[in-house]
Length: 153
Image (cartoon, rainbow, N blue to C red):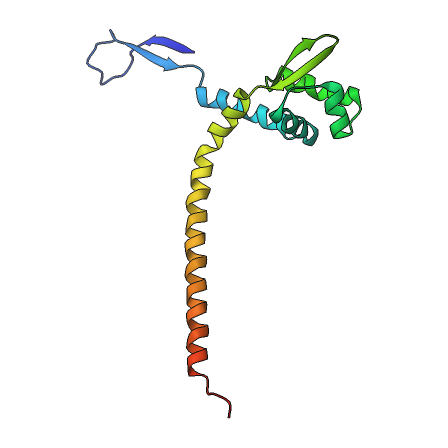
């Protein structure tokens, strides 16, 4: 939320006539809280398993329960949490409710993870170069030992 107030800076040449816009609610804090909530939701293993099942196709509570060997009330509880958080949506098909994945919350997590992925990618590339170098040094040392070894009479 943006607030407006009169300029009170001593060195400002406006004489108090300009308006300053102040940020009254910091976006990054709210965004971080939202991402933390997403992580809390997907931290639960059964919910992650349900999300994994819904990647390929929409499914009913009964189908999810059978595949994950979970009782129907447990599946329903987790689906309610996922639905309220926006991870899944449901449609009614005859007498059953079908659930499908909504990618938006996961895309937000992916966007949040992107800088970390770049960080780790650079470090993993450096590690790979180091290991390749170590392997070539080790190979060269073995070849040198083999060349200098005396043949047995």
